[in-house]
Length: 206
Image 1 (cartoon, rainbow, N blue to C red):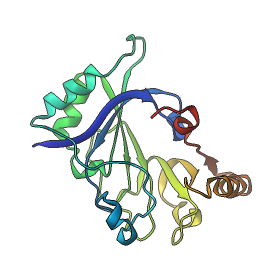
Image 2 (cartoon, helix red, strand yellow):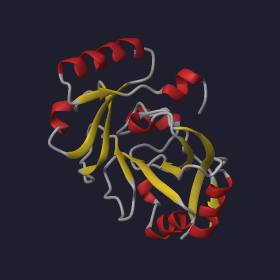
Image 3 (spheres, rainbow, N blue to C red):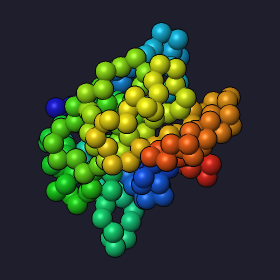
Image 4 (cartoon, rainbow, N blue to C red):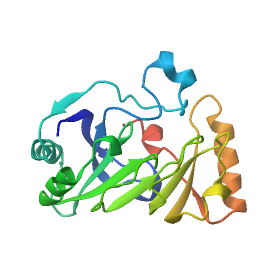
């Protein structure tokens, strides 16, 4: 299989339960909810995405891609290597060969997905971020992170899904301050939910 990758880089995880943890981010190109082109945004299923996932580099084997991920890990070896696979929508490309290749190089594997596709076996951490207007097929995992507020989807609709952690993340944009206030208020009133902030943006890192 050929993988199309937008970027690979070492940083701190900025969101959710693993906030602050050093990680290599492997961002796949492509998504099933939006083309990534601004001229198509108004007709996209997800219109608020703030990630560039268009274009990228081709890798012709899982081993080559895993080795490139490993080359970006700058930790000193005292903790387990950690890779966050994201997109776009990473489950359009992630497969068992890449999972096995990353595990062989000592990586713990996390994925950030919109949940419209079922995840393959072998992942160590599954984070689903549901989008309004979609059918959620990945209904279990470690972390559910809802960008809030979204018209057409509410936290209450998601609470029966099988996740360990439930997060509300304020929608970025011109109303981020109001959205942060609304998300914090909801978490205070519904303690099953916790607040997730995009700390990488606050720190000025990617």
